[in-house]
Length: 471
Ligand SMILES: Cc1cc2nc3c(=O)[nH]c(=O)nc-3n(C[C@H](O)[C@H](O)[C@H](O)COP(=O)(O)OP(=O)(O)OC[C@H]3O[C@@H](n4cnc5c(N)ncnc54)[C@H](O)[C@@H]3O)c2cc1C
Image (cartoon, rainbow, N blue to C red; front, top):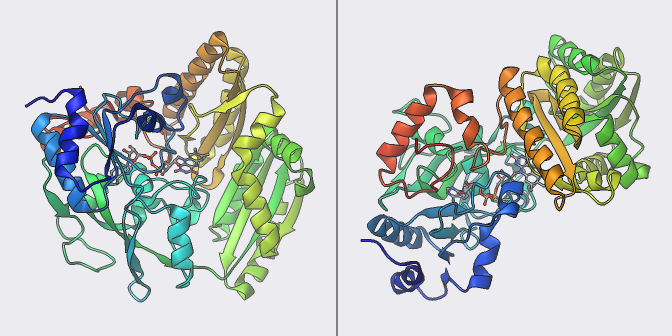
């Protein structure tokens, strides 16, 4: 039974406790965007927004959506860069802003249970009180939610050593497209590993709300390392950065992070925070070591010795305050970029390539050429230790020709990633923006994804228009 746009909110109000439904046009506007340049250019308004307080509220909404064939899109903080949480076909947005409780923290069993709307930094602050942490650390961690991280399989600098969000989801309560509820990973399990059955948890992680809506998460957590230190190294040749990482691997050392800043990124940071004292060069690596205080102070010198074989300069940041200052500055790189190009804005497009580590220098050199060919300014940085190359495209969004050239640059960067044996997205997700590359990247495997979508969501109501699942 189809419902008119106007009646969606009133029907939902009748189903839910008071204060859960928004439909005034001005309240809906923030839900028409995320951080993608795609959504900033053409907003997609929902018909209504529901802010549930329980899984039961979510079930009622999804049942209504299933009965009426109305699209339903889950939303965390809307920091996604690919339009994932934007209602491409209208319908209902479910905002998890009020479902942010931590139900359990169990240090002995290294796990916690939380609702998807909790912000990453808040979860980590709570875990910190128990000597624990949730390792995947996106740059947007002070804003993004755990539900958004799970749905996008987010990660950050520490993925080198600790892996991505996927490695930390032990189970999930999921509302399926017909409004039924399952718990993946064992309905009553508190086990840290399992070989039982098909791993449905992995299916929901990274599926961006297209297969089910997450209402509770059982997460693996880890003891927080007591100490850390960073070796900064400057290089006159990008190829030497790969050599350094390989030297560390050969010595049996896996750093916690190995972050790359190319010369434009260093310039941007030094313009923003001159007292950071970053060394200058074609590229700078930030190599972090973690462990106990004793192990860190010994291994950081060993690492500096190895890094120094190929770097032109090395520096150490050993005090926690100095390390924090470095990471805070690295976290502000997107903002710093704008200082190098006055009057222009950083846009999120083509920003998340991941390629084999050995291909990073070739990828950056080719990407710089494409930037020159399209006449668009772009800086490069990234999580070097796992091949994640971020490109910061900087344009005047009011200039249609520059926007067209930026689109061309982003498209060519995506194709470059596939060409060199990488992926169009290392951590930010596919959403609407990268749906067009799914066939090129996955080949016939895309057809299997589409078949799974048909089985789990035959009406196609869960986050339609994303991941190219409807072909
Ligand atoms: C400045 C900046 C820096 C960033 N840095 C990083 C980074 O370092 N690493 C990284 O991985 N990402 C990064 N991102 C991208 C983004 O922050 C992450 O992908 C984050 O995980 C999205 O979380 P969110 O709560 O904002 O999700 P949203 O943007 O609201 O949603 C993202 C996707 O998750 C789905 N979703 C949300 N909640 C649920 C749920 N409960 N059930 C089912 N589906 C759900 C949505 O439908 C959507 O498809 C960055 C973004 C910005 C703006």
